[in-house]
Length: 496
Image (tube, rainbow, N blue to C red; front, side, top):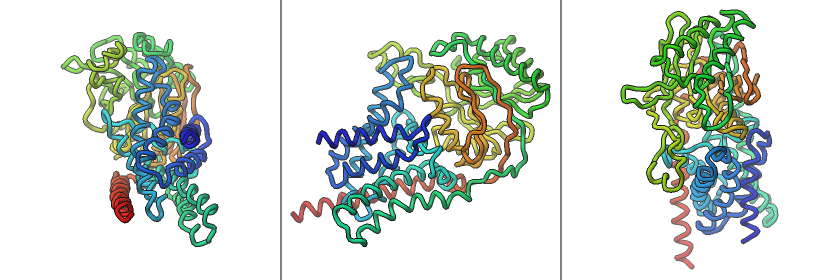
């Protein structure tokens, strides 16, 4: 049992090491192969326990950034909760391992578990989706077919198929017994290569020149917002410097990061004047990350479309808020454990996606944490020919968080067939091509400006056309397989 615990934990570590900032994507299917070998044919509780170990091996290092400034009170409970939910999927995988072609059913059960984690608890936390470990892998084109669930299905099926192939080759060398696991191992890879022609990169709706501004913050940490004016001044200064370097009117649009102006310009004339100066200097519309106060006195995390002649003409309010950051569920309960919960905000979410008309570009916005959520990005991409991800990662210092988020941006580019402009207060800012490759990126905690002519694409990917239906079908199939396997196991016990 100790050996199986070690192997399961190692499997989780391999899955973690497969993801950014590393490019070892192939470690993920190997990790699932080891996990599959450990839990194959075992009882549900064993599947839960061993997958819990694998989940901890994956999520504890993956989510270390959540404790960068508030300590283990956020980090370890979140990692444990995510690992426990993975354990539930592991219990289901152990149960369906009695079925023929079990790698297929096991992969569907894993996707079902990812769906559960994307909606529960507190609105879900899909950060640990397997698809987000694969921006450099061969499975990435599958995002254009059915989004992140299909990538997760392909990676896990490859791994479980490999586990069964090795097991069958050792214990039963008859060729016909090897066919099924070999197919489970090979078919996802073949499908991924088959999806390559569906990844479009042509500028079928024209081109625009985009500037991404990274103004930087005076210092990292939760207190960066205490220096709001400095952050705003940094972004104004970097925009005005770019205007001096290339001349006004040389870019079609500018993207500033989330929280680039945490001073409400509607309530602060000085902030209004500074943003207006920057827009006039660059002579292009700017998407400005701001915090606006509503009539109820509560803040909204808002992107403003700032026209150089007319000022703010449109706004988008972030819809998927970060629990334990922008909001604090069960605040009085968690205050028992730490007073740090009072640092969490009381932000009010928006209620609709908004596309910014910025010259020829129709810019769909997914603000920071939102990029992890399939449905939010899908709605933002509808009617857009360019995607923008304004984000603020300064709170998380030099951790891997910003690289993990950039991986999500890359997956979304392929999923929706759009170029993505990523603007971060402190880095990493980047341009992502529609095929998921990064054409430019910045360093961390340094002022920077990126300028690039990007393709505008109005083609709707198959993933967009199908919407959430493929994931629902996978979840239904996973649950159905689980139900059949439970019946089979009960009948087997009754006959004994």
